[in-house]
Length: 255
Image (cartoon, helix red, strand yellow):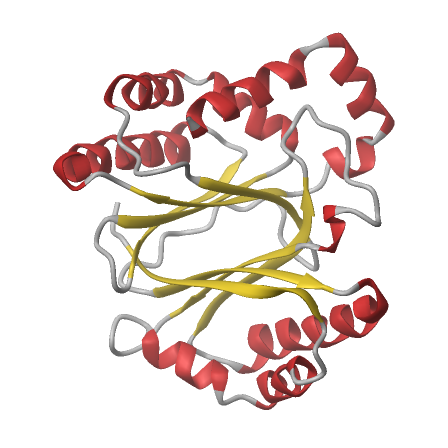
């Protein structure tokens, strides 16, 4: 189960071998550390799972100074499909999260109740172009969220990064209904070596949030009509991906 995988990753991070690996990449380990998660929950245990994950969310935000963000969202079409976005000051803060009593309580619940349909999918990454790496971020209730996975070809990586950077800049500075545009290069789970440049480093993960009418969909529609997004759409027509983009839409749930 996912909780077991996370626990193993945390234990690996504590091992002497892993400590030597992380010491050699201290620059990256001091960077912001994020994860996107997607899962489907068995209908008969949905309410109890929501209770448990919201308790973990509440305690993480309240009791962990370096847990900067913890977002829970429900799929726009499937009430049993859910998404998480978590943001930590660095990998060490994520390691600390895995050692907290509230995470252990949630982990015990998952191991005992087996709430998931299939295996959850978990994506780790280092957010880039973030101007604030210390302030806790609020939960924007009744907003519209999306998590995205993109897989650019190595041959167009520079062009990809340029158009994405411009898209983020335009979103952050010109869209009043845009609440967040976070993206970064994929990385392995804590405790594993950083990915080689010709490997999974070609994956990039995104978390975005929008406000406005219709549970924030107004803000996303405005984003999709913006000039910087049009430049992104033009780029997409050039067949730039090794693998089809993966986009998930959800409504941010209140705590």
